[in-house]
Amino acid sequence: MHLSQHWLRDTLGAAYVVASTALGFVGLGLLQPYMANDYLWAAFNDSMPVVTGLLNLELTVPTDDFDLFGATYLATDPSLGVQAAYGRKIMLQQWTQLDVPITALRTMNAADVGSLVTIYCWADLERRWELAFTSQRQARCVETMSTNAA
Image (cartoon, rainbow, N blue to C red):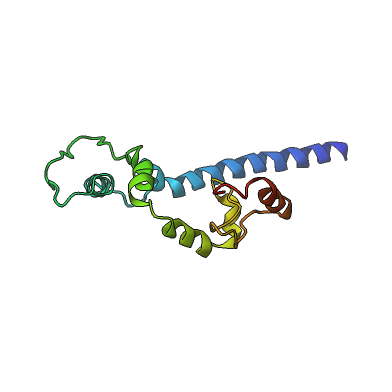
């Protein structure tokens, strides 16, 4: 009887290893179309670098005209990354008026307040709408941060 328990455990263990390995290969087979490129985009084709390059050009350097045929896309690995300074450019040149971010903060879902990069205390300069994620944090905001733009 003791031998049959070991045999059952060993058989189930081997079946588990085989099933896990098989399911791993099935999962990789299902993910293969998404892993075929760096963007994890299943239908990514040769025209996408052109579209992405044009989009990045328009996002980073807004101009009235651009050369559609200026870049060469015959290389096997054209660079498609977004410029590193794009976020800073948007922040400093296009988001300079306070009404846009205040409106965005006021209309955002309350569940998303905890994921803000900067922990704000209020949504407006008159301190009418509290944004702290706990009552203790809001009390600290009232005590120590009511004179700044937090």
